[in-house]
Image 1 (cartoon, rainbow, N blue to C red):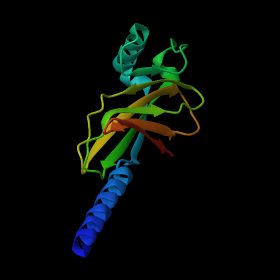
Image 2: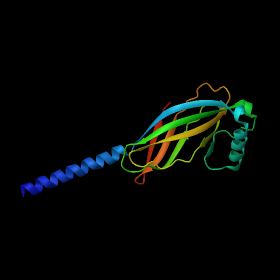
Image 3: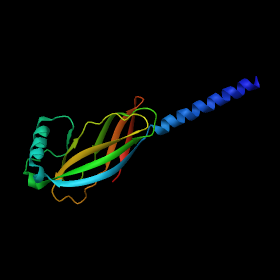
Image 4: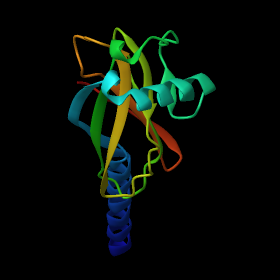
Length: 158
C-alpha cells in the first residue's frame, strides 16, 4: 500500500510540474532587433501602393489617421523588426502584432505572421508610415496570439 501511495504521489508531482511548465512556457519572448527609417519619397511607388491599399481597406493595414493623402516627401517609413521566441512545446498561432501609435503615425503595414512551432524562433517586420521628422522612432507594441486555444498577450516596450 505504501509503494502505491509513493507511486501516485510521484505521478501527481510530475503532472503538476508539467502543467506549470506548460503555463509558463506559453509566453513568447519578444525582442526588438532592428529599427530603420527611410524617407517615403525614396520609395514613391511603395508609398502610392500603401495609400491605395489603405483606401481599399486591405488586410494587413491598420490606419491610425486617415488624413495621409499628402505627398511622399512629407512622410517616413519606420521599419521595426522583432525576434519572437517560443520556448514552449506547443505552437503559437494566430499572431497579431499591434504597434501603439506615436504622434504623427498614419498607418501600420504588417506582414502575415506565421505560426511559431514549439521551441522555435521567428522574425517579424512591421512598417509604420509617419510624418517626417518624428522625434522617437521606436514604438511600444502588443503581440496577441493563441497557445492551446487560450489567448495570450505580450507587451513590448521600446
